[in-house]
Length: 423
Image 1 (tube, rainbow, N blue to C red):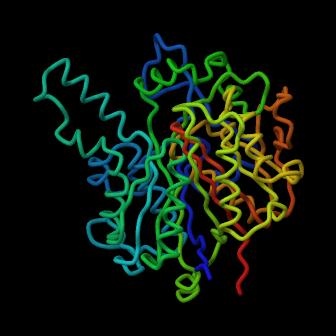
Image 2 (cartoon, helix red, strand yellow):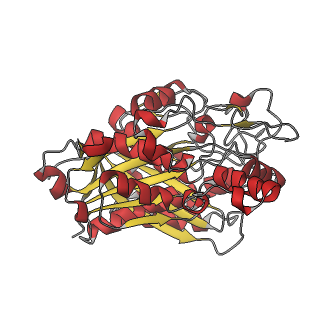
């Protein structure tokens, strides 16, 4: 029998809020976090909008001397991790302004998804290298830019001594990190795992690169909040976002033994590869559909037991109808009874951060009995013919929710969360 895994803490840094409460309120209000880019000068760019994290001061969560050794994506992860551990009751103050994990540090692990790493550091160091030579580069260029820096720093900050892994499967990274964490707990290798995703790549290099792929929305720079419009016939690409979503996962026995407040059950995970194309999903939707079906099988759930599907929903021409086919592949006729929505309509596409943020959205939806809306769904695409909760929050009981993620390279991941019931 599979070991039951539960969620006991959640932390959010997002374009629509830097706390769990603000994030939930924004989801219910259908609030857009997309605005004009302020992190760099967009002169000469076709794309001038993004889902930036706003009013983020890392010293609210982390000692200033520690933040100086962290890239922005790591600062997001550290802040979200601190809030998740605090909600779970698993941190205690310690010397030098750092908190320490209250669970057995050697049986506590970390799995964080990241797609790109410290792009702002890469950008700055390349400028210094080309303009002034190698001696002017940032001394910490390498440790600040590498993708595993977030997991490493979170381990150091909280004294976590179990496995500290980084999952890199592009936009599926955060979801796959959760799946790897689930397996670590079920196997008995860890009792507690801090897991999710983080990303901060709103920099000229990333915007320019995605712009050249024709992947980003460019025709609504004048009305940024309208640009991300999943499943809408008038969509023209995704909006780049940033942020982190981190969850505290525990075996049920460990959580009960310490009297933790259990938020949800993490019931299943599935993954697959399309083996089709480096940027486009396989057109039939079978690849992503298999990931969802595998997650449902792992959770021992019939498709009919699920009320909500949190879509990858990027707002690109190819993704949205393909994902509609995915849902039909996995859920069959029940697909037409599901409530489906994409919170990327509000946050933009936070790349690796999306999986963690969207898992948290599922858990909040289960707890609060609400379906986050897909905003900007004004002209439904005939190829997207399911119920995408258009524009306004809806309410109703949710016992089980699924979140799906698709990444460049054909990576597909899906996770299942259930309302927790004690045995």
